Image (cartoon, rainbow, N blue to C red; front, side):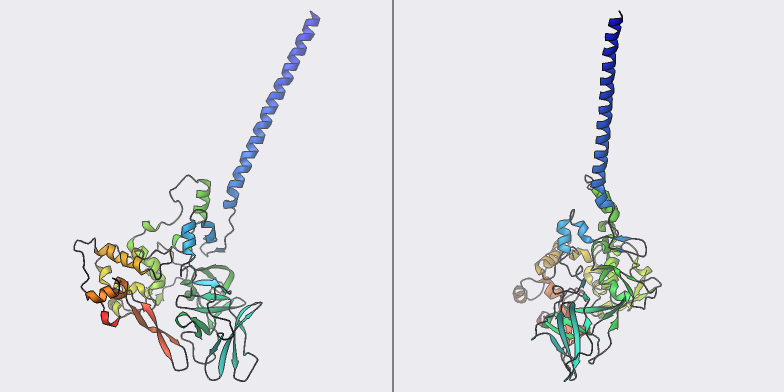
Length: 422
């Protein structure tokens, strides 16, 4: 009997040990699985949760690098990189500076006494004015920033500690040459201070650190170059994190959708920079964000009852508002014809088609009444006829001491023009 008891006890002990072993093994496997999955979740999300902003707005908005958007929107971002908007403010380098540094092309004769030389050095690119018969330049100014995509021209900015200045010499694309900056005197002049209102239309964000809108002191590391996604769509960090954590959700969350804006809100988004000079309210530059009402921040610095008299340079919005196409429509706005994500300059057939899309679907389609031979010669180019290139009254370039030319700008006053003059 005792022997049987010992046998039974041994069997039960062995079973207990096995049970404890199995339970322990299950717990261990559970712990390993838990931490494996937890670590995977961390790896999957930490890359997106720990996003380091490239700049921070004074309102607390984080700006991220626009390249972050490429993974989900590759075509849109890559197309946008080619636009004049995105390239409106860039770091100066051999690729972004359009002017030549070759010996035969790297000079600008400002007047009979001063010649600008454009020099490439190991440390960067410089403008160096010299007086006649002197080898040593009067100064050597480094071109740190390029303003303008080069479609019509470029100007160049220089940092002096945190102070930002515009240099005297610029580049003019139509003549592929260095020129005296528009508005600069025909003599050697001090570099012009660049104010925050100047930068507002050339970059997504720049922080003025002086507290005075009439000062040219900026936080050099808190600057977002060019007009990128966030200028029109608002902060995208939360949008990015959410969709990385919820990849199956195809409905865009936490981002400003352009189709949700009213007509005036869409117009205001463009009018901030494309409505000419504006009279400021108490608000500072970069305060206005898309979706808000522009008149809270600034008013047109001209009489809106005479929009047709506006100069073609810089006031596309005002001229469009004076057009019959605009006044006869309840929906026409800038994006009716322009896709801000794409470089469309020169794609006349695309713009012509947009004219036809409207004018062939109206209750009373409009047929062109112009001279048939002239229309054929122009290859049915609606834009060339009804939105011709017009010489600006304010944007003028001095090529030589006595030579001044006006820059040609395409008018947005849509109308019927004299074909013989086009």
